[in-house]
Length: 198
Ligand code: ZN
Image 1 (cartoon, protein in one colour):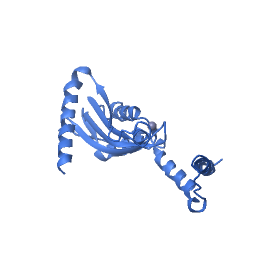
Image 2 (cartoon, helix red, strand yellow; image 1 turned 45 degrees about the vertical axis):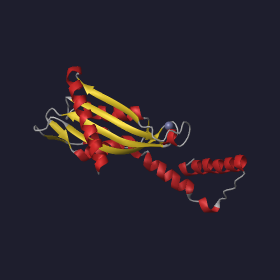
Image 3 (cartoon, helix red, strand yellow; image 1 turned 60 degrees about the vertical axis):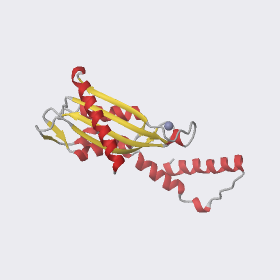
Image 4 (cartoon, protein in one colour; image 1 turned 30 degrees about the vertical axis):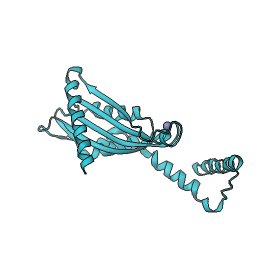
């Protein structure tokens, strides 16, 4: 059975359910294209399984000058429990040993992992591990912080619109990471102040 016919059935079931429990008859004609559009959208939103992190990060560049690389990337993902979006910001920082990856590659890495059925904790760890275990990059430490808003919490259930879920992942030797984490948190704070001014 194709994704289209499966979604067609789910969609018809939804229309029947609405009619049965609320009495509202939403009709058929106007929504003819919905199952196909919805399946196309879902296929796009889960297309991140095609690639892997090594392909996405690609070549590294030698760069001796910088002692910290920091980038914030916006993300949009789907929660695997409800198939509803969660979205927000991923702050990525690492201490390079000899090489760095292109900044646009970090955005591509985030997009790849976001376009999968996700939970925020896994997304956070996957981004950290992709850098930490990259054999060409071999960073000295990695810190990733994700700030996510979950529509499955905001649109239904407890309905706490302003709730932001924060998750972090740290990789590196314990004596190295403490000061590094503090430094990155200060950068994030500064960035937030700056964002408010804009
Ligand atoms: Zn959810």
